[in-house]
Structure formats: structure tokens, C-alpha cells
Image (cartoon, rainbow, N blue to C red; front, side):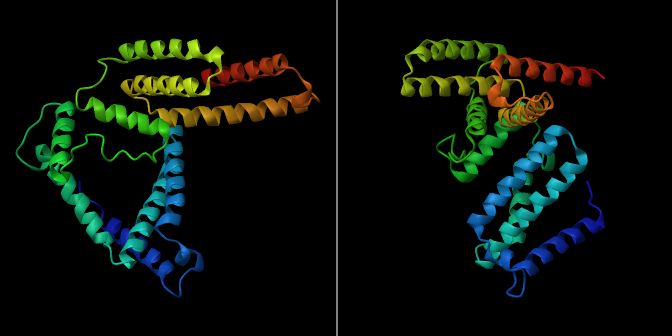
Length: 267
């Protein structure tokens, strides 16, 4: 695929803009940022991009991709100023990596399935980095649901996995029974352990069904936020306060909101 000639020029312009912002006579705020502070904004932009992808909003995806790209260039500029590496080196390295790890596209090797592609990728990655621990590179700082997804996926690449989501669900049901068994005891340590096992097994069911659990939960969070605000609006419309009505009344309104959503979705 050939890029339009102006793509490179526009990228160059972005690099020049970021460099200008970081100059002594540039923007005071941008000059104050370092690799630690900029990561907060980097992660924020990545999550906003993920939200736009989940919602299927192409215009928003395009905007958020731009924001993420800006953060990439900004972070590279910080390291370039330190004399650690240049943006050119970053691009050259990823270009070479993509070519090296796809010999079936850029070389003579041939593979017959995506599974074989993954196997070859892992072999080359392990050889390049002299990896002894197959779970190396999955940061403990990663959000827990996503980390569980990555751990399960990495283990699966080494053959340690359930054959189907249905069989993984059997493990989830087993973990659910264990959680329910300790629930009446109120023992915090036991509940934490069993809740963790339950979450981990459910994440793997999602993975085997092609569902990203982190994005799925974020979607559920947003849905709850919307419904709860609608609940408060309805209570206000009826002249009621949240603390002055029973759970049954609020539950009834909640069900009405859900039914209205389903009816709107059908339309």
C-alpha cells in the first residue's frame, strides 16, 4: 500500500509543531511536561480512543487517533531531548520489526493459518529478546481485567488453554460455586481470593468468544451511568428524592428505562 505524498508532510508538520512547543520560547505548559507526567494524558487518550471504537463512531475514532499520535510524538520528543533516541529511530525499529516478524509476507516463508502466524511471531520474539519467561512484558501496572486477558492469551499461545468458551464457562461455574460458598462467612481474605478466581475465569470465557473484557466493562459502566442519571431525572419529574423512596420503586423505574432502551433499539 502506497501512502499519499502529503501524509509524510503532515506527519513532519506534527513533529515540527511538538518540537516548537517544547522550545525555550515555546508553550510553558508543554515545556514543563516530562515522560512521567505525559503518560497520564497518553493513557487518557488511549481510553478515549477505545471508547470511540466501541461506540463505532468513525469521526470520533479519527479525532482520538490524532490525539494518540500526538502523544506518541510528544513522548518521543522528550526522549530525543534527553539524547536517548530519536523519533526516526523509533520508526525505523518498528519498520524493521514488522518486516522481520512477517517473513510469510516480506520473505519466502509460507504459513497456512493465523495460528501459525502467532506461533512464528512468538518464536521470533523470544529469540530476539532472549525471553526466558513466556509471560514477560505483561506489566503488573496494566488494568487488572486487561492484564488477565493478556495472561490468558499469552498462555494460550503456548497451548495452555480451554478448547472452547463453553468449556471455560464450566470453570467459571465452578469458581462461582466456590465464591458463593464463602460469601456467608464474610471472611475478607477468602472472598478476595475467590472473587479474583471468578473474575479471571470469566475473562477467559470472554477472550475465547473474542470479547475484550476491559472495553466490555467500560461499556457497562457507561450504560450504568446513563441509566442512573435517567433514574434521578425520573424521580425528580415525579417530585421524589432518591433517599425518600424504596428500592422497589427505583427498581421499577430502572426496569422501565431498560424496556425503553430495548424498544428504541428495535426501532
